Length: 117
Length: 118
Image (tube, rainbow over all chains, first blue to last red; front, side, top):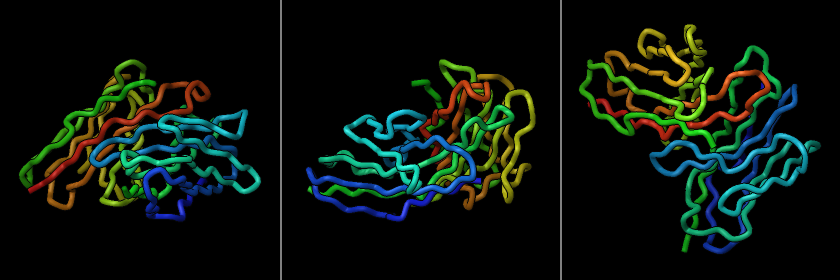
């Protein structure tokens, strides 16, 4: 079984400031890691994902995340945020090579990023 | 990336009526689909997993007779909320992925359906 912890339920930040949204996970098997963004009353949009290779992953909208296996973390960062980045951000993991042709993503509880002018 | 279309985006219904939500994969074959429910300011709660052509697997605590899931084709799954009540009001999101254990590790999400039962 897997679990995902997003310690910060809410992160307020001023426009053009850097931001880091934290994500830690636990799993007995290897996992793939994802960050999704959700704008009000919309579905989830994939920001970035880590499958293998370089531990620094770049995504859309200027976001990046770094996979740290020893710390079981996958923190999301952006060097300079915009008002339009205000949204809910979800970290998720899926087991690698799940059997049976199906897998179930496990989501964190989400972090609300609030960008102030 | 692949596109998942969910319809309707929002629906208001009277208590006691049934509502059907559709989830379509537009450019890939969705062997597996997931249905989630999201309460305000909370994460996604998995309701059920469905594989094309077979019965859905419901998570503990989810009433299968109330939330009917049909996955009759590789591009369409439906969730029917039967005899809806105000407590069923929520945001419902579907997700789909291609078949094959190692083919695709990403699930694509629909835009969600806001259900309000009055």
